[in-house]
Amino acid sequence: MKAEKITEHKSVPADGSIIQFVVWKAPKSVPPYAHAFKFRLAYIQDGVRIVGFDNERGKGDHMHLDGEEFPYRFNTVEQLIEDFLSEVEKRRQS
Image (cartoon, rainbow, N blue to C red; front, side, top):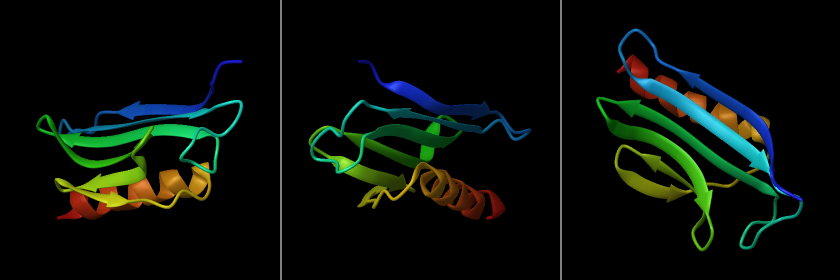
């Protein structure tokens, strides 16, 4: 059984930045995750990723904020998107 796409979004605000995300649900969890979700969320300005949330085998859930990488604790898809958009909004206001 293949992964199922849960949600996908892409927008290009007037300033030319890109806000894009996609979340999939796998049939079962994939180590090292305790959950069955695969995700990729990005906020890009002038071709540079300013905010990113993703997970990959061997690295686990993490986020990229202003060029630095930090662990991220996944709870729910809704919380993931809310956390991502919150970080994007902080940078759009500055």
